[in-house]
Length: 214
Length: 214
Image (cartoon, rainbow over all chains, first blue to last red; front, top):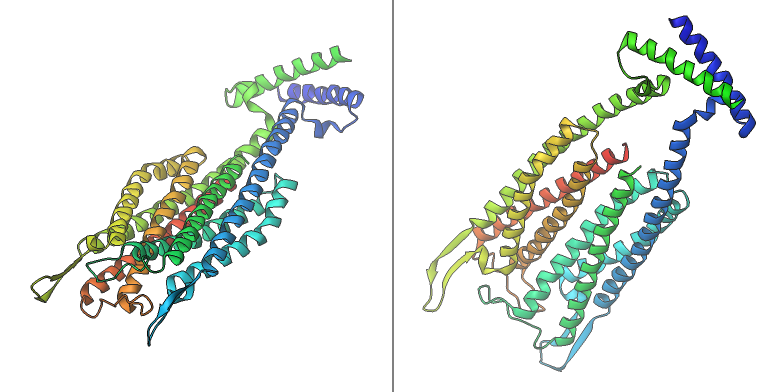
């Protein structure tokens, strides 16, 4: 039985090789008839989808960079001086008057710098959509950047909310009646930072789906 | 030539089927000789590694649940009444005196509930390590839960820092000299929440690596 089997398969390979030589001129071992074609087809289709995901990734990354830069610049350039002063105080509010806002500016600047540095990796995934390593690097660092963004946004939001409403239990008074411009600008920066965070969640989910379909 | 090829391949299938019937009794279509064995070997090795990752995932999930519950309970049960009072105030501090701490308790409770609900999915990935869907669901919801955890922790940290140090620029006074117990407990809760967030970052990276090697 075994001998018969061997005999038949030798004949089969001969028949295959002569057929393939006629059509494509490839070696019979490489041809691996139906399975080979299926894998090739699947790989081409997968590459197209993955390249599409990579292009979306790049666009979302650009939008996130815009939002992070907006958050940094809006908060960083906020400077309101009130048109009156006392002997002891000049009423002026800038971001470094509140440690949380300083953290906010530094964190958003770091995130913006990271986004610029991550762009080459995103381009690599567009050019070579089947390579896994750059996508994995992006997911890991995107997760960490998401953590940084959302922590800055949430901490600043807590302080902005306090500045708007104050808190009677702790005797912390609202300061937005006086520093209206300062408050509205820092609220805008916080919103921009939350938008950046949403883009990062999108980026992580996109890359994970692309990795899953490898 | 085509006729010859067809003839040989029919014979080959016959030879194959009789061989396989002798050894395993499987259909010849399923056998797919060498390629089948290679895939099988790879799948077994991959399954063992993935099962290992799933077990670590489950353990980290349990640790994260412990930390999230600790954060919720420590903050939720904090209640300090000072041993003196005036005509207008009774000096008592609880978490719902500060909206940020209320958000902290709610967010951490939601995260703890999510972690309990996610455990069956984690167990599915241990039992069937090669199935992708539960892992993908876990990554997406873990990322969202990470966002919730870190936002609660960061917002509460900003308020705790303010309670400890106050801020002279905004005339917000430190309250921790009086409410020492309240402050130390809420600081502990914030630390527990940051620990939860670190576990979530670990979970996201673990699942991504497991998905990548599919």
